[in-house]
Image (cartoon, rainbow over all chains, first blue to last red; front, side, top):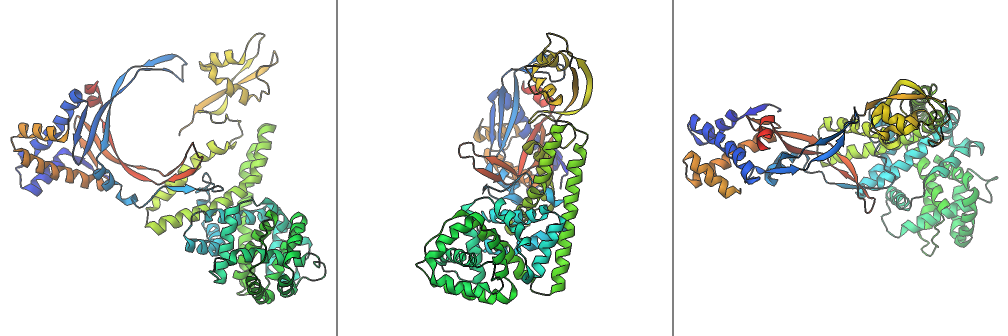
Length: 503
Length: 90
């Protein structure tokens, strides 16, 4: 591995395999490459079977600007040696990665964040893995890629809960543990969840499928029925939501069967203020009523003539329902275990939240107001994005594992790449200094200051300090100039020190 | 120069018949392939280095459809000519 092989080593193999004289073998191998070297210049192209093609490519002369001095320089025409390996050789070398294929990424797959969460907390990752495990396994059974979206959404919902704050998260935990003692107040969280979930038709279907799989009803037609059934259940609960909470599901299922049409109307009504519904749904999932619910599902399954309700909000609620569903199902084991797991999750969430808060918010304190506001936004988005990344990572890992055992080093390198890519794509102000979006240079400090005189333009100044007026944008960004065409006379301009970004 | 011409020239220089030369070349290429498969770098003096590089997986966007694709990692063969060889080719 990674040795250096010399010409002599190659000729030795000829000696070994063909019993050639050592001297002859050496001459032979040397003349092979001599011929390539000699005839390449004359013929411009040499094809050697099994090895590949050597080609001389002429690169035209071109003009360029010396980025350090700003001088115009001409890069002369030159020839470059190009080697294209023979397909046989190329494939042989790429054998370890041969089983990978290019895959299409769907909307909502946040690639930039993909591996970032790999580093901070392995145990957290494991938690998340566990949480999404149910949905994931079903989806994998389906062998479809887009389920990443589903995972992403599921995670997003979870993250939103984290965002609400420690206190509310606590409520959430309590909710899970003591499902029966829910109050309408604690339901404000699911409300937010439903609001934040993007409208995506595809993952919805997948969710349906996941549910179906769970119920082991592989009948294709039931998909629609299930959906409409959910609607019915909810709509039933709506009018009577104040009075009945705990035992509603059992009644729901029956009444749902009786008035499918009314259910449709009410489903729309819920679309507007339907949030408490999700909570009610949760109540339905409580241990006692779980059985009742499954009966309800069977009842609903039998109604084939039920109308298809495609109200988006209703679908949202469906997602919301799915999330606690997987949660509660897992939780039935022992109350203590539930409590412990929730506690661990809570601690990890607040820990990572605190880390992110520190990293992005505190640094920005020294910066200008603009950066701070941008960072504030970032802080808000950060947990969401980060969590969203987790299922992706999991997915990728799984893919890799499924295909075959890919090198571990590969994964970690990929994460490095992802990290490098992130600032470019999101233009996150990682440091307190304002940076130019997509710029080749990074602002690392103030080089000097310049008092603006009458008649000077930013372009002139950029030309003077950097040798090119293209650098004006750095001046504008660094000095927070709102209108570059109108800068006040006598303004103290900070000239930023630039550093070439490494890509 | 194609492979046939290459073999002809090689046999002229080394004194083997074209058939022998061809079979010797097969052995040589097999050896090179094997070495590169082991991710060893082959250095030829006054010419350059054949080495195996890993290309990271990356995301590409189809500009027409805006569809994002994940391109898997690859091991590729890279030939780096030495400075003297480059100079000679000018």
